[in-house]
Image (cartoon, rainbow, N blue to C red; front, side, top):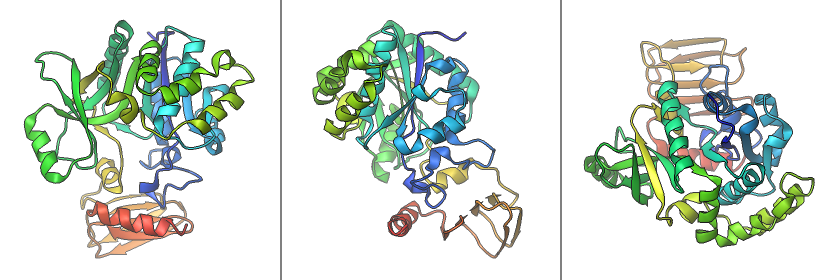
Length: 358
């Protein structure tokens, strides 16, 4: 059963630079069918949460250039459910805007804030975990985050250190850790109480607004000043000014790392990935007997090739590859990128250099 006081805020303002050339400023990763299944990441995100949250209780935070794209891909939403940012100010101003608007709509609201471009492989476990999180946040003035049990010493994720409390689903957070080096990540893994930071949050509007006032007054006061103009024709102009005047700061750094009311729901069965790199995407895709994953082209002929990721955006194109192993081949209308798939830092450097000329 869907609660009328449960809401979902989807953060969809990123430009997905790590997936260039498939992801571009004009059409970022969240709006692309990167998995080759006929659905984009934002569509999958919406469907996942729509199982327990009413369609009218969704808000999407995105850039002004992407509003029409959101409405095209999520036709169940109305235009007033897509909130746009006049400029990029990181996640804290976005969260503040959505929470103050929600409070005006429903003072009893409990909201989950989620990225738009994550992968969840176990929808049933996700449903169970998130329902429990919504109930927990409704009954307590806490800020809740979702921690993923690490399966390897990842250096591309931030970590959450949780207090050891046996048999408890929800435990207090001791501290947040930035992305570690390999040696530190191995230490985290051996300790047993460190979790990947999923970037998903659950809280009541009252709890997060109080935390914003306490820890980020320079953001809270600007969105507080919009006052009764939320959900009126005056909202857009006043919110745009609030964004312009705000510092650029993340909700993690500005609030979550400072509050003493942060809890984590640790889980190991969501089959979660933030799909933050080409390598991560490769790990999720179906592969042939030689561990090649290829999609997007009408015909793909591979000989003496293995462990390759091939993404093509032209369905009429034929791809022929011989003697290639462990490579990324990304082919769009105007860019062909070929580089070793296993070296994430090298791919990142190549993308940064090439996309700067895009």
